[in-house]
Image 1: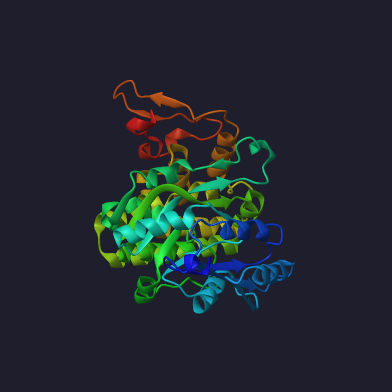
Image 2 (image 1 turned 90 degrees about the vertical axis):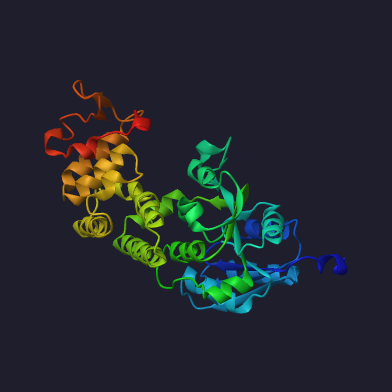
Length: 376
């Protein structure tokens, strides 16, 4: 058995641990169940106040491939960086301690990299709403946007070949060649949320990579806690900061088309989640939202890849029309389907049709209401 385990490349796995006593056992069972058996994991207990540290230590006693590092709470980025200092291996993986690996995750990613010689590989993901009773019949779902980013699969890509892949911002669905990671000087930002995007952006900009269609990772969605956090000023400030960091790297890369796709499709992609929070937000949060929109896009969100209603919301945010954004989001939230459309008799062009009780369309720039051909 020992001779069999010694064959094949060694994968070093960094698992940051904080407040996950409900989920850690299940996470580590998925690690131990990997078809690729040659791995070593460092669990970084980031000052957990529940039983997470004890559970981690119990796993280390059960499996010699697992070790534990304890530290004062410093956040996810710092915990990952601490793990990097302790883990060894030919390849490097990151696993969040409330998620799961598919059984074939490591074997699939390793096989691609051994064949291609690329610097890292990225697999698709499943979202798992484990606490959503309404999803009990089909709790696992590959997000359509992730499926789009990962098709067709390909090896040895550069970011210019597929710039929209920059939207695959996650640390944990990837396997990195450790020698390349170290040579590229990669690390995770510390003291800020959304630390994945700046580092994965740099990886895509600097390296050659494989894009796999297979789902290798299961991302547990705990939506209630995410939504509550997103509504805070600190969360939004962190979001803007990591967007700035990633955008600076893209601009330094110097490819105009990559930058255009990144700004219009990747950076804009999650804004709709924040627009939904405008009803009931504080004045400080609103000012921060608007300042970030103006800094990165100005009025350019009307050209972005956002859905039509959210392009309109972005235009209204830039115009400082909070009451109109509130009315629009509340109205959209009550619709059973897409927002109504209307066609201009003279030009044949299509646009959103917003009721006057929600928004006075005569006060809105035509481009903020305009629909694209595929949206009709």
